[in-house]
Length: 259
Image 1 (cartoon, rainbow, N blue to C red):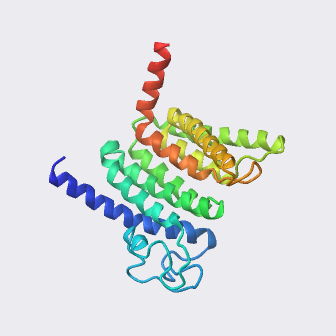
Image 2 (image 1 turned 180 degrees about the vertical axis):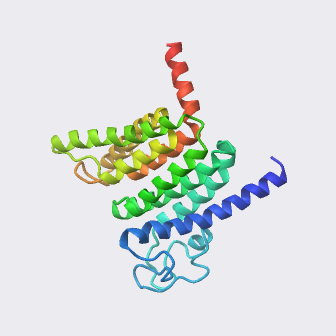
Image 3 (image 1 turned 135 degrees about the vertical axis):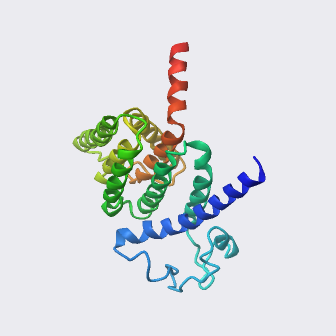
């Protein structure tokens, strides 16, 4: 990769980190009905407004050593992770998807990062984010659709429908598994990706959630009754499917054929 490509990638990383910082704000404020523009961000403990150094994506966290400059309260690593994720994803997408699909990929990453922050903070996937995203991706898929449009329509119903079925069965068994926010998010994934990839996303998100959940239980950080936000698992699985879903399916089908 030449210097020009490196420069382009570095710029995308910086832009992504800046957006990641903003997505943290959106994910934390929208569920509480607070404007994303004002007031300025402040320490959740002492209330001191953040200055220019504090607001530097990634660097600000390390400069302040992960604590508030005023009261020394630890700053949640969620902020740092969100900024790093934004930078890495924005820089990586041009290498992972086609040029046309970038028009889908960047909004998708943005929405999933916002929803992940919100779900981790409040165990809530706000309709104020999901419903506008559904409208946005419906419009985008009318113009950019490598699959027939009916694929996306069926996948929308299928993604939400399967999770509704799982939720109803789990509730009937006395073990509620997920909320309606998770159902709407999976429907959104179907709208973006089509039938084959939404089915893969359902499988991968369940697998990821099970592995992480069992690891947390084994480590004593949660018990079997503790709620676990499912949105982040859908988000991670969705991004994996969007960027690598077709090669994964091809590899799996080849493996089955070989057997």
